[in-house]
Image (cartoon, rainbow, N blue to C red; front, top):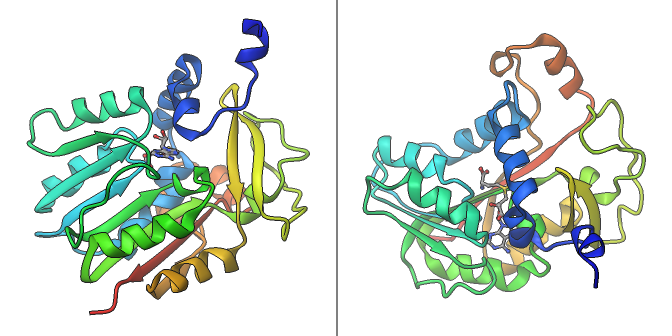
Length: 253
Ligand SMILES: C[S@@+](CC[C@H](N)C(=O)[O-])C[C@H]1O[C@@H](n2cnc3c(N)ncnc32)[C@H](O)[C@@H]1O
């Protein structure tokens, strides 16, 4: 196979982020002002997480682990990040270099989850890269203590349903939703690469949690809030299309 063909081959989540050019573009994107992650996803996630003092935290698909650093500064007891991309895991280790916390370079699917070891599990924008969430949610359930909480964000199902009509890198002004109830693999162009994602409906995420034994506490769609935006035009534009779905659940006490 020629390099030219290989460059355009679709990649699974961790391999996608290990691509030199994709990784560099992703890290640049996260530095921009008013990123959707900072303005939309993180405020809701933090609201649903609440107090983290003395909590033992597991982060699945932790990326650069910047949030782990924040949690530790706010008094979390410990933080374990699981990250499939070698490049991302290396950055995460740098982020936590002056702590004794662990970054595990493994996939969410392959890691051996310890039993009843965490008070809180989070997964920020990593689970839509996982083909089968049934075993993952069961493992997260088992890894939590009774009353332990699971809060995760994914790309909103209207986004994962179909990307027809969107040119990656251009601001979304409107969005085509199609094949919504045909769930499963999607291949999409993003950050100059081609990645595999898995589309699920809102209902699917809800039922997957219930079937694993979780009690669902909240479901949010990251409704834009003006206070988080520097730029009013970006705020107005973000009111058009939902980008994130965030769920909070807990293991019964
Ligand atoms: C959009 S980034 C989000 C990173 C971080 N959670 C954040 O919000 O800043 C998605 C991350 O999930 C990781 N990831 C994707 N699929 C994964 C898998 N199957 N196992 C482990 N990590 C995975 C990617 O390598 C990437 O670092």
